[in-house]
Image (tube, rainbow, N blue to C red; front, side, top):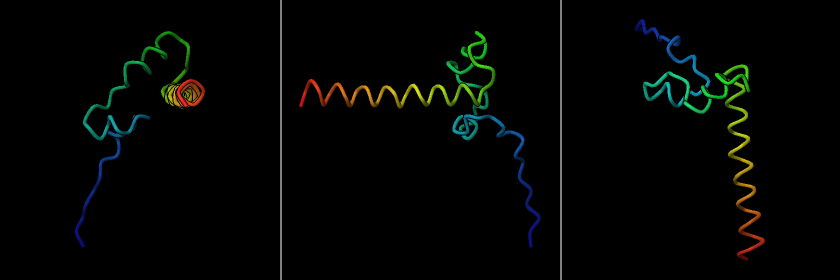
Length: 69
């Protein structure tokens, strides 16, 4: 058996894709939400931003269905 150790401390960010690419800092929009006091932490910012993206997809699908089709 080989003795392999992994360092998981560097991947503590909620935004895991940024940590994989070597950018562990918080994305700008999430940092802005936390800095303005709108949201308390990075996990909440992630949930809110994901909700905004989902809402925009639903709105776009509705508008395309209603006005184009």
